[in-house]
Picture 1: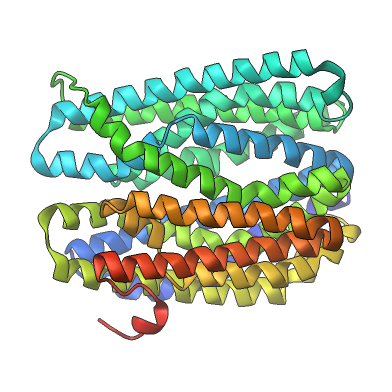
Picture 2: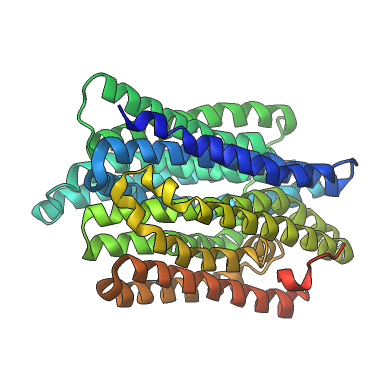
Length: 463
């Protein structure tokens, strides 16, 4: 088809400009100390996120081209619900892994490490299954209220929830152990490859390019990637944790994880409320067009995620040692690693905005103003470095949860106020204001509670 050649462009673009951004970081990696190891982890995570961004972008373009804006919008809506439900079913244990596993390892508490790994995965699968089952029953009971184009894709998408939750927990295990490959490659590289392969096979065999087909492909991709990751993580754990008897400390784990669950829930609101509110007031085609613009601009967020993934383990370790001077120096590095590549990425993406959006289809280019508005919020967040990771790893998860709860409520209120009147621009404005508010509040918390400066203007050029 005519769109197939065009869809290869985002991959080449993403790899080209991200390689130039990473080149500068590589020059600093000449030693073998903790700082250099963390830089290597950051670059590994950054590289995976670059490839992931290219693959995800490619798959979204293919889906939009084949399905059309309306069916694509329906798929975006149901997959958003998978992200929300799957992201909550681990009860915050995914982020708790990143904080607790390094501390247990530092203190030689191998039994607790083994218990947390096993119990966290079991909890995610169990609750994910319960939530998916409740969703299926709810859809059946509601009947005509959810009939129409959304019904069957929603039924199918719910089958992704348990294994999506499991993948989130295993992501936390990998990052807590500094295994960037096992944490990131299955969900962010393998899963989109499998989704794209399944859709290519469906198209080859003449299946209709509808949201139901895409949801079926998502089931295959989500389950396969999760099982592959499970087997690889188990193999690595067997080599490092031995056979010590599992110990469980559920009360202590949930004391850490439940505030992190609030944080995860609020993050999901900030990432997805705009799409869900647009689906309430506007057409599926509008949902698809907005999602394409938001995903294009949010490519810069993989820098924030990559740095956060690499530094979280180290932040927890330094905190466990009580080394405040090195901790502050490490935070300065993390802030600079986050902001400057994010700024460069934003400028490049905005310069290429119209051509990139046009790859989805000619009508998608109308959403370029959405990108211009969203970039303000994304850069505000990047200017504070991996602030949420810092607060969570240093025991301020409750205040971090309070900050995100306030901004999530603000985001919902602004979306409902602005979308009916201003449409897609209103949704982007609501999201951008909320992200900037969260960044400012995180700055205040880090400065007052931890006595650590996280703003880029207080860290630029410092060693």
